[in-house]
Length: 165
Image: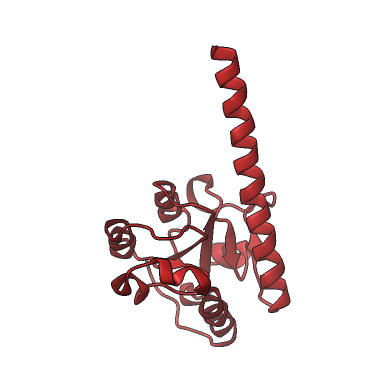
């Protein structure tokens, strides 16, 4: 019985991994179509502090590691098809960036969880078609993909003063 359970869990984990990689692949394509400058964390050497790997860094990991590059022009995006408690992983992935972003396909996350995300300066990015599954109060704090892409474009055009963290 233990061998069956172990095998079943390994199959389930492989499926979840494939879904996550496919989600990142779709985001990669979307960002390229919009002409955004970015790098995925999966690449060799694409790490931040403590060897963490944000899913997406805007404009690049080399800009992130350049102390002369304005921190206000850096954005990072974590991508999780479902959040559960794994959203907290995103908080430690890029210390130079105070306000982090997390894109998810998960509908109707609890108010307590979205309040906690907000208290940690984590901006939840959810496709507009899913916004209706959240309460009216939660919807005021959500960002859709279109708004996130616009935010990235503005950060990549407008120079900002470097912030000390």
